[in-house]
Image (tube, rainbow, N blue to C red; front, side, top):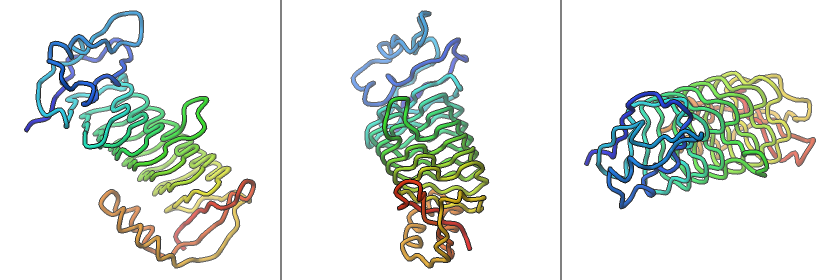
Length: 269
């Protein structure tokens, strides 16, 4: 059955909040009802029908034909067994607090993508803004589960306060990758400038290109990690590059010793 489809009529005149257009929230509503849903973020009224042509289909699979950097909160609180695909760009907070399911974006995403993600599989085929998987102001932890794959570049402080889950960044990362890292895994295949792994408590950073590491990381020597090879097999379907790095011999650096010191940075020997 064809997916439930939102086709972009024109670029919205303001940022829009698409958190109300997830599959579970649309269940039981007619197209006419959905067209009347308010999605504007300013005093000027804007409804879903003003921005999209809506075609009925399988609500377990929602598709956006056409994207915009003004599309905020796409897939927010998405539930398991549902999927969303965006043919284009999205704005801030993609997959915010998603409980499960799958979100695919053919373009780029804005700031705070996957913030608070609990279990969703999110793939961004373009670039992503700052603070990927990071907490919003006042929150104690960032992403707490799931998997995020970025095919392009990531902005600054990707994985800030990551609590659990896997981030794969196939392009370059911005400054301070894995800052205040609590736990989980980050794999970066490109360049990683700045204070990599700053205040890392017990997370694993896997870096295909070794940067200048902070002095608070201790060289533990070359390692032949059996678990890394098993882990690589689980990542191969999402990123052959990440799997290749983890399959080889790795140099381990323990830290950040300025905090717990139970984290690590792994790089090819």
